[in-house]
Amino acid sequence: MTYDEYKAFCAALPAATYVIQSGYHVWKVGGKVFCIGGGSQERPAFSFKASEITFMLLPERPGFHPAPYLASRGLKWIQATAIEVEAQELRELIENSHRLVAAGPSRKKRCELLEKRSDSLRSKGR
Image (tube, rainbow, N blue to C red; front, side, top):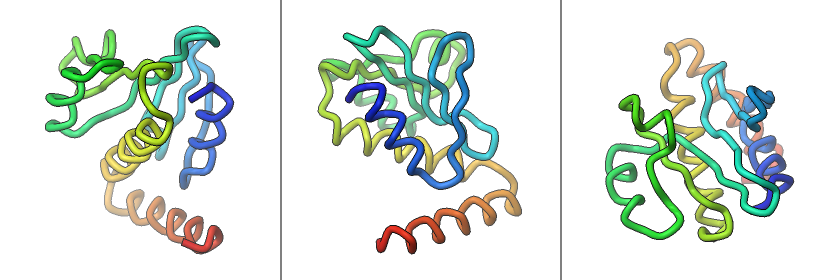
């Protein structure tokens, strides 16, 4: 997955917003980070929130490891090196991170985000 593919994919997720923070490509939902792109153009890497089980299992596979700085602070974040991981798997993991983070806000905010997601899916014919 290239940075352009990463940006296009994340931009299509409901209520996703993009900022550059400290030189990193950061995507948020409901004001909370769900994915961070870093590394070089030749070797992009993407960090994302993971479930407890995913956080335990993925680092056993090539191309995955606990995200620097985030995992060391007790957060369940994984970093994947794009050249070692299939783009489709990365998309699924990033989409799951989006879902995990979107489920975190208040009930009112969660309803707003899910409503936007439903509208987005309807417009895409899903």
